[in-house]
Image (tube, rainbow, N blue to C red; front, side, top):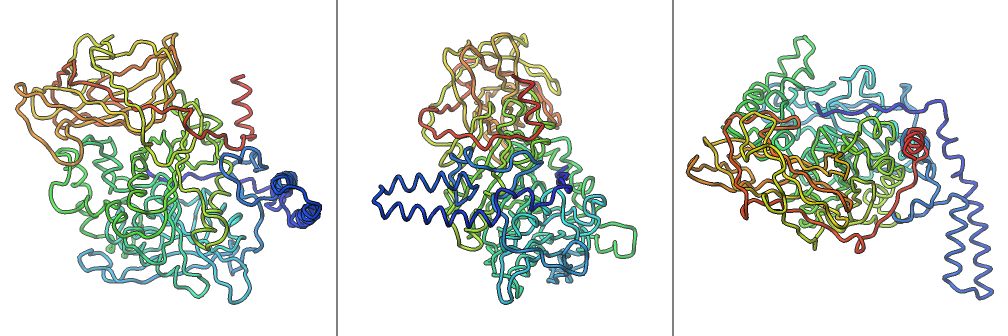
Length: 635
């Protein structure tokens, strides 16, 4: 299930105290310090000495301009709380309203095509807005989170007027005081928005676009809208970007979907949740047993379960345009004129990293100003030390803890919004911050990076058959041949999208291959570093189904692993295990015995970087108790 993750905030400590070292009085001290520097200039000190003195005074006083990411470990970020914080408190308080949360509720009306059924043509979107108390006539940009969970999760958000504990409260506390509005928006069929729960279909997309326009045209708005969120709430920004809406200036998708089918299928192979995702998981949203439920009788809601089962059986779109309607990236690349700050967990168990990699390169190549932040967390935000620890394990991110915790993230967001919504400050760096599975961060211009060395390991050659007995993969079984390299004589650093191209023959037209890649130490302990899966009807890759003559014809399955960034130590080996299924994937609907052909047509291709050519950096050190406990345990 794609969902928001609630975070407990420390309500006992006033926000002002958390900024105790970053007060406005320090700005006055900075003024004095800068004056001293000017005096020193008058006595002919060299310019570079003055710059160094100013930087040191700022560090001592906790005063922040914009610090490059590779220098942030030296600056006084707040690193002992449950989440990150901006460096300085803003000038504005939250504007008080009639309710205790400082919000106002609104309905946005828009036209729904009659073909959408349900409540068409009268679409209604429900949203809530929080405003800063700015002087009369001052307009502000708005940061919005769109999703299905407001009014639906009774404990965290009993109504949309209550800020979400997972992200909304942080934005209201930390970014709104810098002159921003915040909004929460219920997608169609959820909360008090009418119609059916369309699961990211056309009706939902039109409602998202209408709400963006409404937010950008209010008298308090400067016309700049940003969308941010994780999971489902990280998918709605992609929906909005498909329209090229003039008010949408920037989006921050966090583990969001570039398409619904892409969430649950990879090369024709189906996750266990895929056949029932629409109605089984989200279908009850918006249904409460009253007479208004008739508004949920939409065509796509009715056919949803059938499309999921059909895609499992036959691998793709059987009839109609259900999945095509729910694919966003192609329209984003064609229509969107804003910027993208793309965030993804490399160990996300829910929204796999192919939603971001190589998507970041496609955005760059389309001329969309983009930044990537890819850490070794799972389905989470970048700055949550408790969740990062609790939801990681050996080979699933634990080796990168606590360096994965990015306490500079909220400040990073503020800088991003300042530039793209207000046009103030310095332009953020448009690059990718990528973390290896062993915790090391670095900068790349794009990801996967260019100019890597490719190592080819042949099955039966550089990869030796060490177990499994034969080269046969039985249908619906968890066991098949296992291959392993000799011990590496030097460290290697694998980056991007390894490929496994293997010659196979099948008993019938069908079959499936799951490939597991592991890093094995000298004492035989192996950890997961990556995996791939393919329904052999899609052995050329992509979405086009192929056919062949079983038994008589050999095909080459061009498998691609999910993105990984992996450091392998000298003395370790790489192990490749093949089976018919694994992880949370279903057995193939077209089960078949698969025979692997070893030799020159079957190779594992891995791309490696030279660390000496890269800009490595460390983020601000985590001093949260969870981090300290783990570090003490590992010493």
